[in-house]
Amino acid sequence: MELTVIGVGEVGAALLRQLDRMQGHLPDLIGESLVVRHGVVRHPDRERDCPAPTHGYTTNAEAAALDPAVDLVVEVAGGRGWAPLLERVVGRGVPVVTANKELVAWDGPQLRRAARAAGTDVWMEASVGGAIPVLRTLELSWPGYAFGYVAGVLNGTVNFVLDQMAAGQSLAHAVAAAQAAGLAEADPEADVSGRDTQRKLAVLMQLAFGVAVRPDDIPTRGIGAVHPDQVQAWARRGYRVKLLAQAWRGADGVAAVVGPAVVPAAHPLGQLSGAENAVLLSGPDTGEALLMGMGAGGGPTASAVLADIVAAARVRRGRSGLSWCRPIQDNVPWVDRPLGVVWAAESPPRRGRVSPRAMDGWRRITPQAAEPLWWWDGGALSG
Image (cartoon, rainbow, N blue to C red):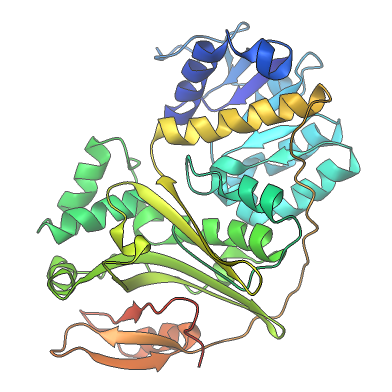
């Protein structure tokens, strides 16, 4: 089976190394070897710490992705711009594996519909949660089941940064430490602003709720206004500050929010450290289920990509596998629900209730140096 890999940066190089290490096991797993035929990159002559594709590196993504000899296309480059090309790929009946949360959040439903119409699949496990098999668990263990609530710490970079801030580091120094540890991009804006978490929550809503939402419809606040003094003060009270994603689905529609939240340190979400991620799922029949693991870095993300590649290869060979077949509902109404909020700058902290959209309006009208934080109380935050 021959592959084209679009993007051979940190994740793509880790993937090529992992594939090379697994070659001896692949015939038993899928009945054949996996060969990387093309690597699509911006700078073909740059030295890379990984085995080279058999046909080398190229800047011609279209030729490499649509090569008739290629059986599967892997996209780990990031950005929405790949959607038209990948739709052409699946239109030819060739499966796609992607780690691109922005593309999956915005264009995933349409791409999956095109794949289904052509009798193939789009595999996207690595778009949420790094090495945690969140999406695969949703599809295999609860196919078609609509959860009522999902919450998660979905950005390992930010979780690492907040840990550093709890230890007294400024936001800037904490981000620099994350970059030095290989957990943050040169431009960490998507992480710090919450946009990366916003996109991942949109993907989770596709799989947990069966609905398509625009990521920018999710009210989102990042950690830019969070001060180390806030983080440390809550730690002394037995709480942790986390960048928390939350979404609900009820009979009247869906609601979602991303923002800094005060979480009990004793709760599993509060216990996460470093680059760990977690997803909490809750439904009337299932109760609560928690999935935890490493959510940032090239190795964890590449491991999820590789798992999808193996699964896609097994499907191609007629062996057991997974088909991303859940139907996605469009145009689901949004509801605005009041949530607990706390003004941490006051002592004792003053608690209240406000809706995410009302908070967005309040922030525009009354900008403050110390912004309120969400007060997390599980799925029971409705008014």
